Image 1 (cartoon, rainbow, N blue to C red):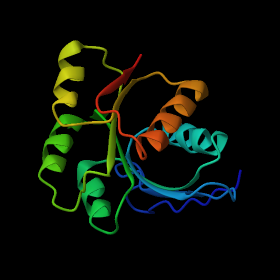
Image 2 (cartoon, rainbow, N blue to C red):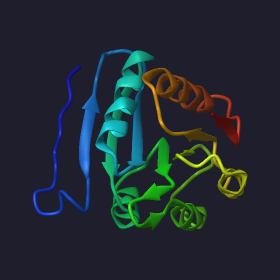
Image 3 (cartoon, rainbow, N blue to C red):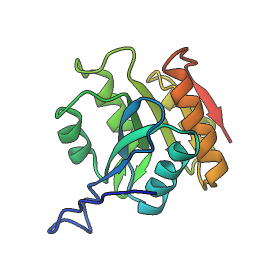
Length: 163
Protein backbone atom coordinates (compact mmCIF):
# COMPACT_ATOMS: atom_id res chain seq x y z
CA UNK A 1 0.00 0.00 0.00
CA UNK A 2 1.65 3.27 -1.06
CA UNK A 3 1.95 5.67 1.88
CA UNK A 4 3.78 8.92 2.42
CA UNK A 5 4.62 10.01 5.95
CA UNK A 6 5.73 13.52 6.87
CA UNK A 7 6.39 13.64 10.62
CA UNK A 8 7.27 16.89 12.38
CA UNK A 9 10.82 16.73 13.79
CA UNK A 10 10.59 18.68 17.04
CA UNK A 11 7.20 17.69 18.39
CA UNK A 12 7.09 14.00 17.51
CA UNK A 13 6.24 13.00 21.09
CA UNK A 14 3.61 15.67 21.72
CA UNK A 15 2.20 16.22 18.25
CA UNK A 16 1.68 13.24 15.99
CA UNK A 17 1.04 15.26 12.85
CA UNK A 18 1.71 13.16 9.83
CA UNK A 19 0.13 12.89 6.44
CA UNK A 20 -0.71 9.53 4.97
CA UNK A 21 -1.69 9.71 1.36
CA UNK A 22 -3.32 6.67 -0.11
CA UNK A 23 -4.19 6.45 -3.80
CA UNK A 24 -5.47 3.30 -5.38
CA UNK A 25 -7.10 4.68 -8.50
CA UNK A 26 -10.73 3.94 -7.61
CA UNK A 27 -13.43 6.11 -6.09
CA UNK A 28 -13.27 9.81 -5.29
CA UNK A 29 -10.60 11.40 -3.15
CA UNK A 30 -11.77 11.91 0.44
CA UNK A 31 -10.12 14.54 2.65
CA UNK A 32 -9.98 13.24 6.24
CA UNK A 33 -8.76 15.06 9.34
CA UNK A 34 -8.19 12.60 12.19
CA UNK A 35 -7.55 13.66 15.82
CA UNK A 36 -5.79 10.53 17.11
CA UNK A 37 -2.73 10.04 19.30
CA UNK A 38 -2.26 6.34 18.47
CA UNK A 39 -0.38 5.86 15.20
CA UNK A 40 -1.44 2.21 14.89
CA UNK A 41 -5.13 3.21 14.97
CA UNK A 42 -4.48 5.88 12.35
CA UNK A 43 -2.77 3.39 10.05
CA UNK A 44 -5.63 0.88 10.46
CA UNK A 45 -8.05 3.56 9.32
CA UNK A 46 -6.02 4.18 6.16
CA UNK A 47 -5.90 0.44 5.49
CA UNK A 48 -9.69 0.27 5.96
CA UNK A 49 -10.28 2.99 3.37
CA UNK A 50 -8.06 1.03 0.96
CA UNK A 51 -10.13 -2.12 1.59
CA UNK A 52 -13.30 -0.35 0.44
CA UNK A 53 -11.59 1.16 -2.59
CA UNK A 54 -11.67 4.77 -1.40
CA UNK A 55 -8.99 7.26 -2.41
CA UNK A 56 -8.06 9.14 0.75
CA UNK A 57 -5.79 11.89 1.95
CA UNK A 58 -5.67 11.70 5.73
CA UNK A 59 -3.98 14.16 8.06
CA UNK A 60 -3.51 12.78 11.57
CA UNK A 61 -2.92 15.12 14.52
CA UNK A 62 -2.56 14.41 18.24
CA UNK A 63 -3.96 17.54 19.88
CA UNK A 64 -6.91 19.92 19.59
CA UNK A 65 -4.51 22.78 18.77
CA UNK A 66 -3.06 20.90 15.80
CA UNK A 67 -6.57 19.79 14.79
CA UNK A 68 -7.91 23.33 14.50
CA UNK A 69 -4.74 24.52 12.81
CA UNK A 70 -5.26 21.87 10.11
CA UNK A 71 -9.03 22.43 10.01
CA UNK A 72 -8.54 25.96 8.72
CA UNK A 73 -6.02 24.99 6.03
CA UNK A 74 -8.51 23.32 3.68
CA UNK A 75 -12.02 21.91 3.33
CA UNK A 76 -12.50 18.46 4.86
CA UNK A 77 -14.96 15.73 3.92
CA UNK A 78 -14.59 13.87 7.22
CA UNK A 79 -13.49 14.71 10.73
CA UNK A 80 -12.66 11.82 13.05
CA UNK A 81 -12.13 12.58 16.74
CA UNK A 82 -10.69 10.35 19.45
CA UNK A 83 -12.34 11.35 22.75
CA UNK A 84 -9.10 10.80 24.67
CA UNK A 85 -6.20 12.65 23.06
CA UNK A 86 -3.65 12.18 25.82
CA UNK A 87 -4.55 14.85 28.38
CA UNK A 88 -7.18 16.43 26.12
CA UNK A 89 -10.94 15.89 26.18
CA UNK A 90 -12.40 15.23 22.74
CA UNK A 91 -15.78 16.57 23.87
CA UNK A 92 -14.20 20.01 24.20
CA UNK A 93 -12.98 19.66 20.63
CA UNK A 94 -16.52 18.70 19.52
CA UNK A 95 -17.96 21.69 21.39
CA UNK A 96 -15.59 24.03 19.59
CA UNK A 97 -16.33 22.33 16.27
CA UNK A 98 -20.02 23.09 16.69
CA UNK A 99 -19.24 26.81 16.42
CA UNK A 100 -17.03 26.52 13.34
CA UNK A 101 -18.45 28.39 10.38
CA UNK A 102 -16.06 26.60 8.05
CA UNK A 103 -18.00 23.34 8.47
CA UNK A 104 -20.96 22.71 6.26
CA UNK A 105 -23.74 20.19 6.85
CA UNK A 106 -22.00 17.85 4.39
CA UNK A 107 -18.91 17.52 6.63
CA UNK A 108 -19.08 14.14 8.36
CA UNK A 109 -17.96 13.88 11.99
CA UNK A 110 -17.37 10.60 13.83
CA UNK A 111 -16.13 9.87 17.35
CA UNK A 112 -13.77 7.07 18.33
CA UNK A 113 -13.44 6.08 21.97
CA UNK A 114 -12.66 3.26 24.37
CA UNK A 115 -15.59 4.47 26.47
CA UNK A 116 -18.86 2.56 26.36
CA UNK A 117 -20.39 4.84 28.98
CA UNK A 118 -23.87 5.93 27.91
CA UNK A 119 -23.08 9.46 29.14
CA UNK A 120 -20.10 9.72 26.73
CA UNK A 121 -22.13 8.38 23.82
CA UNK A 122 -25.08 10.68 24.54
CA UNK A 123 -22.84 13.70 25.06
CA UNK A 124 -21.13 13.01 21.73
CA UNK A 125 -24.45 12.61 19.92
CA UNK A 126 -25.56 16.04 21.09
CA UNK A 127 -22.89 17.49 18.80
CA UNK A 128 -24.55 15.98 15.73
CA UNK A 129 -21.97 13.29 15.02
CA UNK A 130 -22.50 10.75 12.24
CA UNK A 131 -21.05 7.81 14.15
CA UNK A 132 -19.51 6.58 17.41
CA UNK A 133 -17.08 3.64 17.31
CA UNK A 134 -15.68 1.93 20.39
CA UNK A 135 -12.05 0.86 20.68
CA UNK A 136 -10.24 -1.54 20.49
CA UNK A 137 -10.50 -1.80 16.77
CA UNK A 138 -10.04 -4.59 14.31
CA UNK A 139 -9.50 -3.98 10.62
CA UNK A 140 -13.01 -5.34 10.03
CA UNK A 141 -14.54 -2.71 12.34
CA UNK A 142 -12.47 0.02 10.67
CA UNK A 143 -13.68 -1.14 7.24
CA UNK A 144 -17.26 -1.00 8.52
CA UNK A 145 -16.76 2.54 9.85
CA UNK A 146 -15.03 3.69 6.66
CA UNK A 147 -17.87 2.24 4.58
CA UNK A 148 -20.52 3.84 6.79
CA UNK A 149 -18.83 7.23 6.54
CA UNK A 150 -18.40 7.07 2.78
CA UNK A 151 -22.05 6.05 2.40
CA UNK A 152 -23.12 8.78 4.85
CA UNK A 153 -21.72 11.27 2.36
CA UNK A 154 -24.59 10.38 0.05
CA UNK A 155 -27.31 9.67 2.63
CA UNK A 156 -26.39 10.82 6.17
CA UNK A 157 -27.44 8.68 9.10
CA UNK A 158 -26.76 10.83 12.13
CA UNK A 159 -25.79 9.42 15.48
CA UNK A 160 -24.93 5.81 14.65
CA UNK A 161 -23.11 3.74 17.27
CA UNK A 162 -20.88 0.73 16.69
CA UNK A 163 -19.82 -1.50 19.58
